[in-house]
Image 1 (tube, helix red, strand yellow):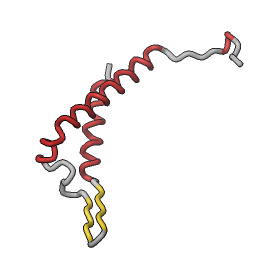
Image 2: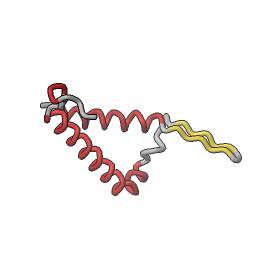
Image 3: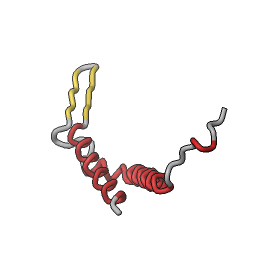
Length: 85
């Protein structure tokens, strides 16, 4: 059943524009990372000092703590850059 016409909610177009920019940017960044992955691995990204790696017989555990922080900072800067007016 549809709500009465007077109670319909609509989001402003500005919100939709920002979401489109964010999703397009995120897609382009992921695409670029995928293309550049062989060179990124040569730089050592993913095995930085501070990343936790435990290797034992029959057991491997890897938690990329420093890499996660670095990626978070880069993404935060990108989002800040695209969200400012």
